[in-house]
Image (cartoon, rainbow, N blue to C red; front, side, top):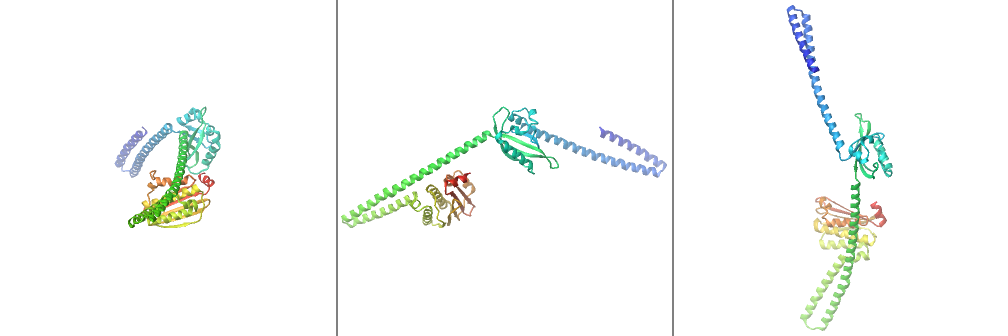
Length: 419
């Protein structure tokens, strides 16, 4: 409306100027003509300014509508979010809350405003919550921080809340308060605890199964060595007696063939018994068993093995676990790596035994390392984890694979590792 009046006024002025020009031309008055021209320029400048002002007003109106839409969108997000949202001042007093926050705290929204947040924190979480709020007050950035606290609604049981908080700053960067998002994670935390317990039970079961397997292997190795070895030795003795009491070159030739078969079978039985349970591991310790395994692997596969080891002592079950991890690592090299050499190191440091096996093969992908179907790698990790140890596998395509194993020497060290 004001713009229309301004336009009408300028049109009236234009008509006056036109009449003045006519008058000045009739009277031939130069001063009047100059004044008319100056007035015309002023009117034209006024018209341009009016157009610019109108364009600026339009932009301001568009910006205002956009801000109103954004504000409404924020209000909708604030009100209809599935999480509880509250706004606090620097004194940690609630200034604003959405309907979900009021429901979570079991207080009407109008009564919630003006109350300190700390009155809704369970006593055992108060100290930690106060420290967290003080920390937020001191930090300079407005980055969001996530923490947990036990919330005590009015008249209801407490629940565990995941709280995401961030600072509110004015245009000058001065801090004016905090925003907080509250989410009830009691059920999630309970499921996590149940999942953790299930994993611990599965690991305990896996450890027990490994123990039973080692016992069975040990039993089978003794049976093969004692029973089959004794039976094969008795057969050789009987054949020797038979050869000395039977005449005939053809029969002697058959008996010699039987001697060779018995020797081959004896060697096979001995090798199988050793693979099931190396006597070196029980009689001479871990280093001797690893050294024997490395030489045996080199002879069978043709892959060169370089071993650097220092004398280490490890309890029987831990030594068995580390030896089995070593066996599985060499088996993977033979099956998949296409390597020409393997470097092995065994040493002791800070209460841990460290074993490293690296090859120059084709490597293995990260997906395969972390795949749940890689049972051999999973078994290696579980063997180490059962004693508070760890297995790390590093590999690059075409640049070989490194297996790093660490196992604590004593159970106390293992517990400290887990803590």
